[in-house]
Image (tube, rainbow, N blue to C red; front, side, top):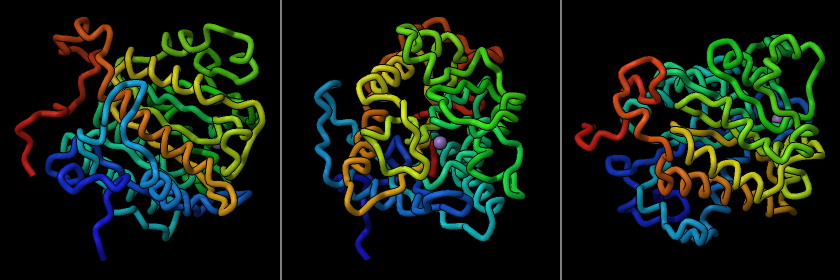
Length: 313
Ligand SMILES: [Mn+2]
């Protein structure tokens, strides 16, 4: 079988040794409750990415030239717990190779493993959770690794900031820090919500992006669509601010549930991923100087030294 490259990029940009970015597909859909199909998400995303133009007008860049290595998919699915542990291990492995690690799901339960890995590798981590749903249940249908529990662990051991929330169970309120939750109905009438979110973020930020945060008029192909979501340009404006004003250490995108007759959702997911890479590699952090010495616990520098040129393989 011919080796597949992310977005069909030339081999010279797709090698693990030289790529700055690693993309890990996780086609898992073991615990979803309503519409099944998130396991088909990575394939639809990769297909759409291969049909996308790779020059970004806004940033005047071709970010794929930083190198994107498409890792083998994580296929462990014997149990939700085993899947989470596999994602945790593989994510950590690539972080330890000094890569900018990104994942594409799969349902949101994969992020339990992703976040665990990033939290073990980076100081003072914020998990920026962009989603229609709070995902704060401690346990659901007999497992702590259900998609409905995606950020419960993060709520306990990271600085969790939630954006776009418009659906939850009343019991989730007890795990919620209301100062750090931005409900969609409040965002709709607060023109300063982006800055208010940024004020809650520490230096190192991991973004977990559930595509159902986006309004279903733009992205209907998701397992649990909820009206009242984010629109495209406000999403991009917000992400660009986050990448400019904080050190984004990695991200995952989850819950694309492709529909054979509706390709624009796949395409939006592909563009969103690529935009995030563009913002990562073209933005210079505005307040970089204040972090220069990086010796205390509040520094955004990692527990590892990231992006060292002399890394060995
Ligand atoms: Mn969701």
